Amino acid sequence: MASNFYRCLWLIEQLSPNKAKTFRELDKAWQNSWLNEYKEPLSRSSFNYHKETIARDFLLDIACEKGTHRYYFSNPQLLNQHPILAHLIHNSALANLLQMYQGLEDRIILEPT
Image (cartoon, rainbow, N blue to C red; front, top):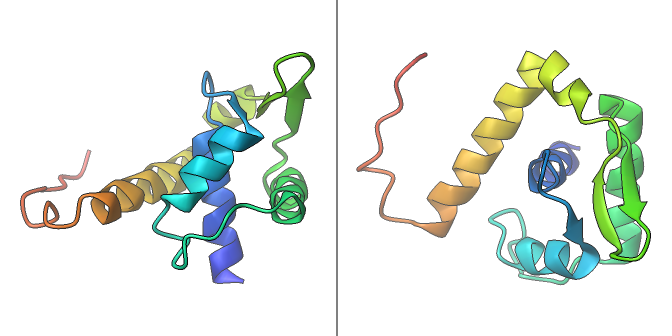
């Protein structure tokens, strides 16, 4: 359950406004994600499952742009209306960066805003 939640946050962060991506780009990002311990490719069925979960739980619809086959949020304004979701996405992105750049965590100081 928890890992699915973080995977959904990861996908939301990947597609946050102005970040439309193809499935291939998402797959490449997934293979480098700290959530993907075994560096397995992103399967279509997993992507569709998380896409449906995001629509159901976060009310964010992921659409595919015809021609370019880029995925994007058809209702990105909802991201701005949910400050808790924005906070979770930010923290998930930060965790991903820290994992990618191990050794930096002792040099980064987080301050409350």
